[in-house]
Length: 126
Image (cartoon, rainbow, N blue to C red; front, top):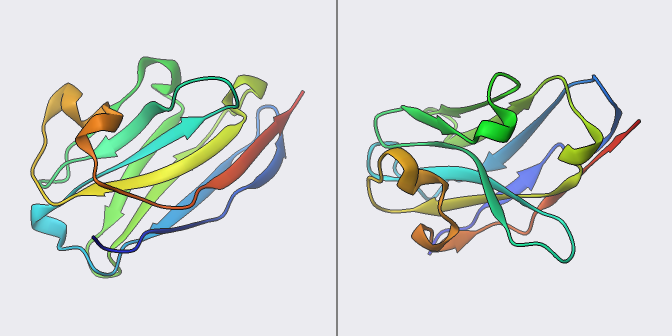
């Protein structure tokens, strides 16, 4: 299992933007699926956005049009650009990886991933 380290979380007002990052230096871009998940206390962790081995993305309906996941093959980083943030986006955001090429809706399933970061908190105030 490789190490995943998230950064960039913080507090922002509703309507604002935030970009969080995940350092994944031990993973090979072309053979690893990576995704962003979020969790609030008392609820299950849910998929937000993910990128497959070929760079294609899957995005949850709840954030479609506002959030964008991307990967930097040189730096081996995963990013989540969050625009138009809402109070309901408040959560702990986790980066996940799996050394396999997942596709489509599988990319947003928590049980498909074997490695997880420690999380970064995003708080959106109204």
